[in-house]
Amino acid sequence: MTTATATEVLSASAARHLLLNMTPNGSFGPDGDDVFVVRRGEGAYVEDSDGRRYIDGLSGLYCCQLGYSYGPEFAEAAERQLRELCFSPLWSASAHPTAIELAERLSRIAPPGIEHTFFCGGGAEAVETAWKLARRYHALRGEPGRTKAIARRGAYHGLTVGTLSFTDDPALREPYGPPAVETRFVSHTNRFRLAPEYLDDELFTSRLLGELEAAVLAEGPETVAMLIAEPVQNRGGCITPPTGYWEGLRALADRYGFLLVADEVITAFGRLGEWFGGDRYGARPDIVTVAKGITAGYAPMGATLVGDRVVEVVNRPGTVLNHGYTFAGHPLSAAIALRNLEIMERDRILDNVRGLQDHLASRMAALAGLPIVGDIRGAGFFYAAELVGDLDGGGFSDTARAALIADLLPRRLREAGLLARVYNRAAPLVQIAPPLISDRPLLDRVADILAACLDEASGRL
Ligand SMILES: Cc1ncc(COP(=O)(O)O)c(C=O)c1O
Image (cartoon, rainbow, N blue to C red):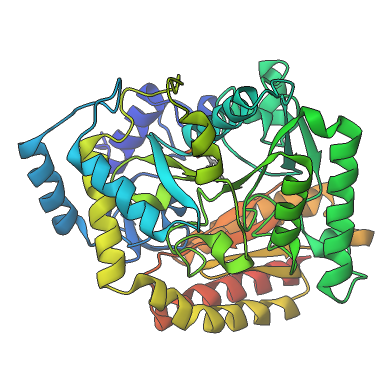
């Protein structure tokens, strides 16, 4: 009789008792063969239950800005908070000092004109809050007919029933019936797909803004409540905006009266070398949504940062903000977020990204020479390689897709000790978002592994 290893016991139990997110949970078999059990982390590395180490090239899921070795400091912050006050809600005119301090701190780093924060549990709740605030803002100003949203094709803004409206993926949305919010999708800013013929940004930007303006006019400007966009769109592969795009969004929002929401759930807190990714692109949003990196993954938290123009309306005397979550601004998460901001400043985390981003950019750009790589995009510590296949026009045959994208690439990357994201959708991609504490040798190692794996895949095309 053979004895089950610790990994086998954990995997089997996971398959029996856990419903994993975005996972074919019924396909594991009783032993949970394919469940990847991560047991511990250190620096930029995680270790699985068999003791194998991997570079966490995705920072958890774009969360762990500081990697995994700050546990003792966060534990000290958590212990201090829990000894003082374990819980108190931000409800019915009640607050607690840690949430107050965090909100004040966020106002100091937020984009200009944004001084208020509504806390919640994660990204989707932050986006839903943005939507409800937008609706409330318009209704209070006498425009209740602004019931529609605009989002960008292929974008992901969450999976709750509300945020699914803004997430452009029919496979995720359609099983749950008609969207809660009528949403019009406009082009993202992937020049490789949309406009390789434009050599400069100016034409591309004006084409995109022209399309957006036409969409607003077609819907009826008086019906549009908000536009939501990420500074660099994650889905579709780290899609950066062309010059002038965010300024153009601001101008159109002002012209037609809708609110501009920057979804910074991934791009805030240093991912692009700035506190807020939009700062890099001249974004002047009315509302900013954040989550993930706000606590560097050491606790769950989300937040909606709200600009003065919206606050002036929704805070009119006597107006109740009829929205809330019991655990909004939980003292434990707030204490962790505060400590995270302190550490990021003390250890100059943004400077680390700023100092190394050109190096990472050039290492990534070098991958563009490989036959399977069509485009390299990204900024800061956030990059994607869009892959091109064996068909005319760059697509993949079913055979190549199954062999390379679904199998060889993810397997080889993991064997080489790198956790990266391999998307097997319309545009196959490999994506990285390493912890912001990564040093040059670590980024080189990431790039070397990507190069070796993509080179092998190119050879098999
Ligand atoms: C841009 C963006 N918005 C919203 C969300 C939803 O965040 P959460 O999974 O915390 O609900 C995500 C999650 O990845 C995201 O990337």
